[in-house]
Image 1: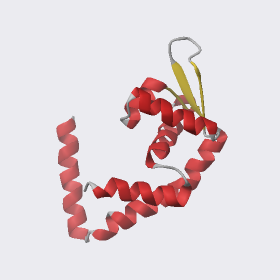
Image 2 (image 1 turned 60 degrees about the horizontal axis):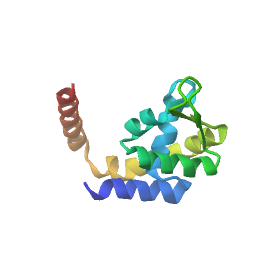
Image 3 (image 1 turned 180 degrees about the horizontal axis):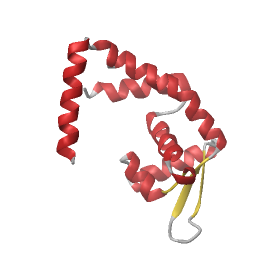
Length: 129
């Protein structure tokens, strides 16, 4: 299982030029109101440290995928916004991500195993509240 995230990351990076971290940033911004999040919210949503999300966002901003600016109501904080280019890159990356997950996970399981796995994940989700 430790190798799975790396394999998924490699597949998406090779197909799209986006790392899974960048993909997660774009996905979270695409689902947020006005396609923007505070940096602290984005760090929490992607499970990254404040310093790591800052580096990722700055690299993505240099490629035109996001824009980082001061929060309009709180000068102590920053907001990251998805750009049209970032949204298009996300749309283009989605099929590659889905194909990778299907090949690496779904296609490896027979229907009975898939049903059992789904039940186990439901139990885990219930345990999380």
